[in-house]
Every structure is written in C-alpha cells, then in structure tokens.
Image 1 (cartoon, rainbow, N blue to C red):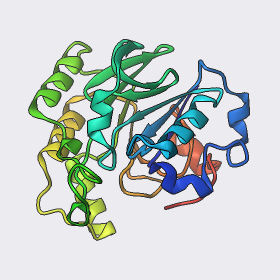
Image 2: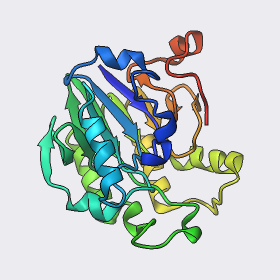
Image 3: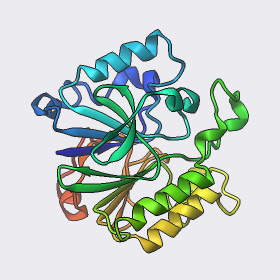
Length: 249
C-alpha cells in the first residue's frame, strides 16, 4: 500500500506526531513494502543536529518506508548533499535506508503504480527567514529540473497514475492564496509549470500540500495536510468515510 500525508514540519510537530502508533494504529500493520509519502515540508532534514538525528532514527524504525517530496521549508543544501541512488525507477536522496527524498521530476513505479513527483514551492514567509539558515533559494525548481520533469513525462507518453507535489497548479494556487490570505501577484514560474503539467498529463489524482488543509479542490486534486489517505482513495469513498485522524489545519 501507498499512503499520502501532508506537511510535517519536522520536530515542530513532535507533540502531535500523526505517524505514531497511538495516532495512526494502522501503522503497526505495515511492512517495508508499504510506503508513506509526505507531500512536502517534511522538515526532518533541517540543521543536521541531534534533533534531526533523533527523529530520523524514529522514522527509520517505523515498519514502513517513509518517502517525501521537498517543500519550501526544507534545508535544500543538506538535501542536495545526501547520497543519491535509484529507487523504483527514479532518483532519490537516501536520508536513511528507509527514509527517502523523492527527487524532482521523477516517475517512480511502486508495486505497479506510477507516481510523478515534483517538489518545491515559494515561501510566503521568507521575509522573516534567514537565507542559508531557515530559507534557501533552491526551494524553487530550476529550469534544468523542469526540463528533466518534461523528459521523464515524455518517456511515459504523459500518462501516469498519480502526481505528488508540494505546490498546486497555478489556477488552484490562485484560489488557495486568496483563501489563505497569502500573496499571489499572478503566480510564479513553478506554479505555471505545474499548470502546464496539469493541462498535458493524464493521471487519476493529484495530491499536494503547502496550504495546510484537507479537502478535495475538485474531482482530481486533493489538498492534503494531517489526513493519511491511501493513494487510491476516491472522492466518493472519502466523503462517505473519512480516513486519517480527522483533524484539519
């Protein structure tokens, strides 16, 4: 099984860790073949200190494999320095043997399910952050990363099962920024790129984080935060019987 959850923000969430067995009893039943994917702002690769080490060991000791796309609130310098390897047909940074950063512009085949990943987003709060300590310009994908993403999708005929990003496509981001009172100003190149992908790609469901809520934005776009949902969840089933801890951002 593949499960999706949203922004975790590292040790900042330690008091209400949704992946503990107390919060998520289903986790006890999983194995290394099961995967939990965080849709950005993972946050446990932050300063390389003892707190990071403690929580990464905690995650490594979970019975499943933890994966994440990068968000804006990550230490992108530390992530880039992690050892790189191939996993399920795509490139990952190995944070721990079973804690993996799903790199930008990759398509992974996880037990017969194809998943396109594209991390990154712009920090609306960067004016209150310090470059190289709590904010990194690499939070936004480069032209080269966007070209790699297009090449990966070209090789699949622009057809995958699922999409996992941190940011939303431009049209959805526009609405969400207005609702969240975040600056928008026409959007950025990353949001525009995701809009391009959304218009060209054939897929079942697109999961994204960043906006700290849990809801379907339409029939195919699922904003994810504290909920933990199986990747094949459909809107009808979820509306009938919510999955996860039931809390919202």
